[in-house]
Image (cartoon, rainbow, N blue to C red):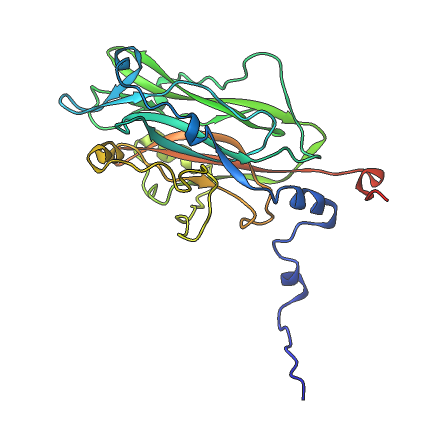
Length: 299
């Protein structure tokens, strides 16, 4: 006798976390490989001899300098699905921002750049937080996001400014508007699993308006397309990893495994947690509804 497996789930659970039929095309278009920008083959091996011309941070009187890569990272029209802080250079002593993006542009998902430089600008001193000593380098922890709910991140860079005798690290983002899109769900903020307790009174107050969901650390079996040479990133010399105590390099990403599968980055903010610079990422869920004639398959 053939056995029959009976589903005891409610009808609603059968459709849980599945995109509606009118958004199915977008779900399918987002089933593309992801890659990081810049690719590892393009990463500079410096700063080395020219470090004196590179902005840097210092967190104690005798502590090492953390250099900052201020080069802009742009991905064109390819949707950004993740961000990370990274230590570049021969000595892994240069802080950089990296963007994860789809390997090509979905047909229906077309961001359009707005005129002028669209970097969010936050200089409010209330957001300046020390990493360790109050007399040394600080980080601006202001959320960086667009006023337009239909805009997504298309570029990022670091900037080091001055506040009195202290240097301050800023995150700058570039945005583009997704034409013909609508907001499907309220944006959410993801943070590193290490961000259990926020430093500073202001960060604690601000965090109450954000989602508290955290991303689990990536499983060993997960495949990230970082480089053809180093699938998990270039090897880091053990003696140079001391700067990791100042930087949380957790990769913040969302992909097909995060229902409904087409989240995009729409903002970010730097955080300071227990003397460590960390990153929180804002994700938006936008849908482009095709007209009936556009949805028809050719032939």
